[in-house]
Length: 504
Image (cartoon, rainbow, N blue to C red; front, top):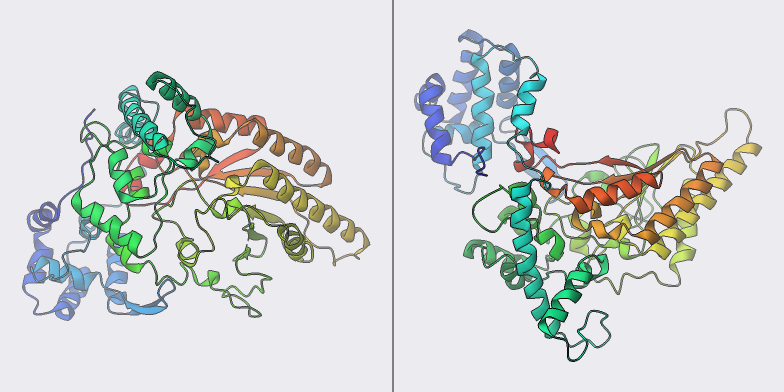
């Protein structure tokens, strides 16, 4: 099963510019600098053979904004916008920064190529189906065959890892006198327990490389070691590692691999991230950038009038893995989110604090939607999650009762929607166990009686390769418990290829 949709190299896209966009490359070679190039482009857009006015307007915006600066919230610095300037340097072989991704040149090539084609109609179903066929899912038999081999290799390494453990308190130890076959059967049995994968999560570059059959490049390993020195965590479950393809042939795993392999830019930025979005920067006693005064910058986040995010002080401050594109990377950097699972267990004071946080929702006139996330909402243990949901239930009841005493035009918005944000259906679907289903059922049944109408598990699948039999089983159980499932996907380069998200 050879992947057909390989990415262009820098040399390949340069050749495309020179052979198919000859007018553009001529304008670049005739220009002494980027300013002259932009002027010539403006003139060309007014007089050249343009077939797509919408494409011309888009390029005009690129020209007009080139050279301007914007405020970057993650670094709290002004950064310069450069697209057309960099394109001139690229086309005239005067580019200095070799680290610029080929994706920029591919995108700009398509932007300019659109000038010479009339605006395309939306693709029909047949075309979309053709694009979708490029992308196998985790149910494809060829994919599953590679993953069975992965699992066997990883299990063998996990056996060695357990044999070398010196933690008598661990539940995952081999009984004295166990044969090799006994050990393998035990690990195969433990493989179906979410707790096992969290206990055995890969936390070092060396171990990661071993689990992937020593397939990582020296460059990638050095980058990982640099990340670790900067305090950037490594945390990947054996289950998710088994989804990758370290063989060098077969399915293209870039969309999921890029979630656990960090980029040089991310590693360089880590340690200096202030916030990904300006609303996330919170100072005590001051409204955030969206104008909301929050009781605690670490537990409640808010950008919109009708919804506020709750991040509990529990194991929900961890995840089943650290996503390279995580918008809360700054919270991992500051230690508010982390992978010290034992330390993240709720303290005695958490329940008192939780009731205080619920008052924020209760006394707000607009909030009707609570999104419990983290980290990951489903990383909280069942008992802890039930206490959080019970607190939400009591708050919703009080808000409803208070409205009975409020006059016309003074009633507050009542809680109508409860969401749990989780990527564990992709990272660790075995987390959806009997205990969790019972907690979710009990909450939904009583919450419906007080006017809460919507119950969502907000998942985060990035690729059809993450859709496995285990993930489907977990999703069906959640649906049967009466919780709807919605999905978010980050449009990384690999996940933005034609047909990829449609296939997902």
